[in-house]
Length: 530
Image (cartoon, rainbow, N blue to C red; front, top):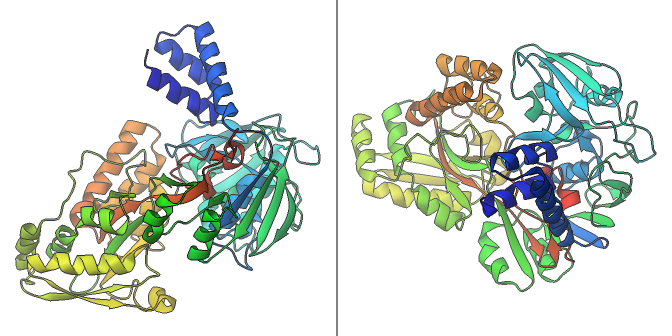
């Protein structure tokens, strides 16, 4: 028996990522009898809970917050909205630490064709006023996004659902316009939180999550108390205080002074200082958020693929990871599917910095000894200024002069991004490979920043979305990643970690690829040390 494997399985059960039934089945496959497996699970779960004490408050400082902050899921825009939401509400599904959909309000789901879906709800979920959470709540919550005058960021993602109805109190049935095997993962999107049937006033919303709202001031603070009526594992802390502190230095100084227990959005530039601070721990989570170069293929000079290949070979990825992201990142490989994604294609050889290959392609492109303009901005991505300067240095051995222009943050997205041929860019994490590839690379993608268009890629994307067989689906995603690496207009520099920090007296805060604000079970995992 592998102690490491059984401990990993116990931890997954404790976090809600593996059901007790599946644990028992896998334990049996390892040759562990039912009695012994049950004893190990009970002991392991008790040990995990013992590390976190009951009571006290957790004070969280977030890097976002403003007057647009809301408790209405159809109006969620920022990470602080998401964090509050997962404390107050229960989503239909949640993301586990392998970026897979796991049960939350829906304890199971099924589809034979990825078009017709049935979501089976837990029967023990109550609202904070004692009423049961039912299928009517789910239908009402999701239909609000599709209302005629809705401006919800989730509306475009949900419009694929052409029929939605409650089948009794605990089953929701949906029909899609086209097959989508990612539908359960789609419902991990924070905007799709489940709220009370008929509720349209969110000044004091009813809760079915691990906490209930005590007070809220947009852009300032939310105070939440433990919901003892919660369906799942009770939250360890009596209270959660979520405060917006936009200034990075002020937020980190407050953590080091003990004024906050947890802070989000740690700046790479102060990581070394933070790691040396007494009583402070850095918690980094490998993520799919990434920094990249965007090369527009619809205009000169980057309409030439030899030039695009040269620019990709010039990229000193390992140096970016070490110097810009301080080691808290994974090297990119010129496509947007991260190593944390189940559909990441690890059979594609890693592209490395190679000035000789860059010279070869520059010559083919008629750019030997030439120059190119690169536009960057502090608004573009984390470390954008350092990325541009390191790239400029790396290009010289290949015989290319890179002219860097730093664009003011307030005009970058309107004057440089998708306007200039060669820019530094960056993307927040997306819950699925399909969503990331669709918006960034599909011919009619809403944010196709390179204007790269390929009909075969578009067809593969649609086919993969509807494919239920995992192996066949992954093969399609591998082909798409290869196409992007060889011909695409995006050069992914690195997938950088979601970095947060905590006081050393905080327990249960483990890395999550979706980040602290998108971990549906953050509120029931984190508490003060016993």
